[in-house]
Image (cartoon, rainbow, N blue to C red; front, side, top):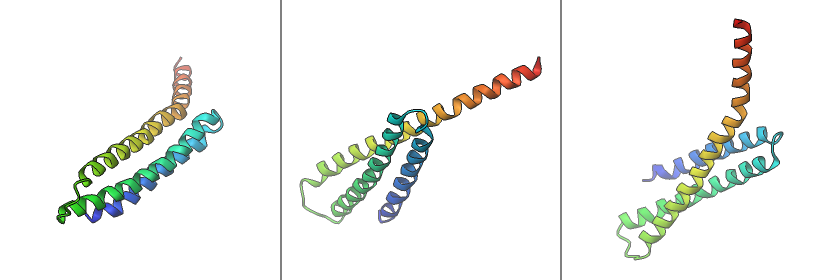
Length: 116
């Protein structure tokens, strides 16, 4: 459980940096896509912070806290966290596809012309 606190920052920083990097490359194509990636990067960091609070709540429950509200709070935090991280990962996949697809198409067209 305590290991969870260190992995929170690792996945948060990794996904946030990746979103920022894709946003930087998309800036030449679409300012809206770049702004979306920058916002998602910050939201993923917020999700990592929510994950830390969730872990704290889980530890409290495991240690016998009598707070009846913890399960509902933990469930809400997990749902928000997974939504934000999921949106960040979808942005990474779609953004990377937008960046890579034209290069792959150019390469295929170049290979096809050389074969003829």
